[in-house]
Image (cartoon, rainbow, N blue to C red; front, side, top):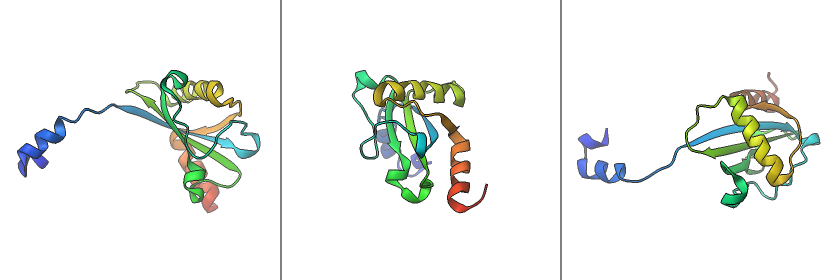
Length: 125
């Protein structure tokens, strides 16, 4: 689209390297959340984190997006993935166990998490 307006700028933008990532949202009951999170993000050193390149605690960053009795993590794994949501959730769960000691039971993941948490915040289901 930009090429028809400014081919040189389009070429410059196309030359910027980027990496793909696979995002996954994970929801937990706050009462059972036993992970050690300080602040709202968990980037972690590359050797410690494995495939996970970032993880944010959504309710700390945006309190109105998560009910007070829930914890929602939004994690990003480096590279493209053909894995199912369940496989991604299991993989991220294993990394979170190793990095922050999280053993809490996941109650919802990926697209389900947004709908379930939205309903809990706004009184619907």
